[in-house]
Length: 159
Image 1: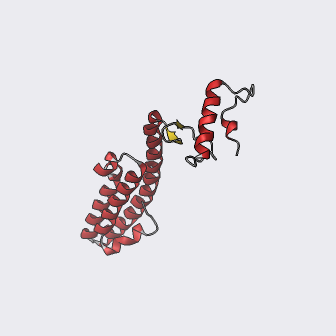
Image 2: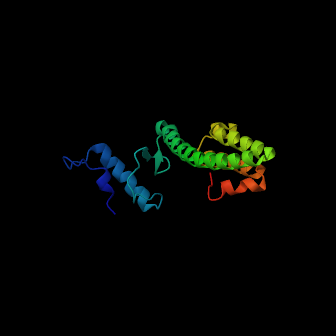
Image 3: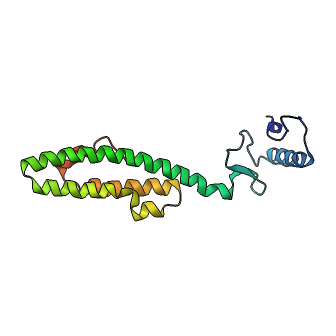
């Protein structure tokens, strides 16, 4: 394995004193079986000398979560639109049939779906797993509260 590809200046092919020191440290860590340097660092990672591992830079940790959270919430909003449209169709049918209980249940579910990205647990999430779990839990509550005739709207969609 060539760890030097990450430490040599690609323009001059020169290894500076700091890079020699870093390379020696990595070689010692590899020899001791402490670290796997088989991959280059990600954009938001730097070498952590204490743990001998690539680690997310503290200044990048929040930015990384914010990007993942935004992507997940955008995907949730897209699926939510599909659900809102399905429920709208069911609500129209229920209204034409005079089924006021179903109309109210659909109205309640639609309101809850619109608020799902603003639920307290979703807003309070500090990592992507918490966010996914919070959205999923809020969605499961909505599905569980829906009458049996309304369950067809939720088929095939998992938030």
